[in-house]
Length: 192
Image (cartoon, rainbow, N blue to C red):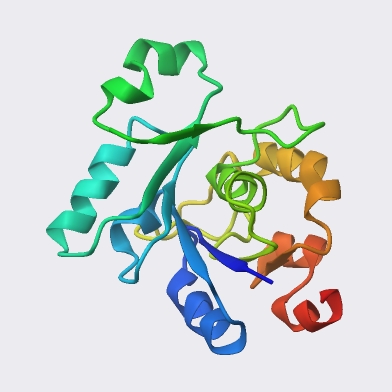
């Protein structure tokens, strides 16, 4: 079974990554948003619903002398706001993999973390995903933004709920609401 690690941007993410890597064999890492520029390990993919910010996060990796990701992944569902910014090909993302952001039956955006889960399971054919730093809890501030709750958290949970039939038994989380919904890594041996 091939396992992907999705690395989010919630505070405490790197502690969660360390524990996950010590307990589960990880085959590839997918970093999301701020973790793209800060995660010191090798990345299979850098993933975001915010393609206009990807060039900045990739420059941060370069500035920190970190190896770039094998893949850069964003979504195909451009809103009018994204259309004003330009197509992904115009944003300095040559070779970016553009995917549909939704699982079948999903109509609400579920955060960049869910886009990374979808990319891992559907587009890159991993068998399961471990979430680190993707608790989907409003009070877990993003790395570098202490004491600032994530205002959009509750809205994005709807996308996760809609995608849940595709995630059950395949997605496991280190913490928070996603752990409550999908289970923790100790359940991986039960899932096969």
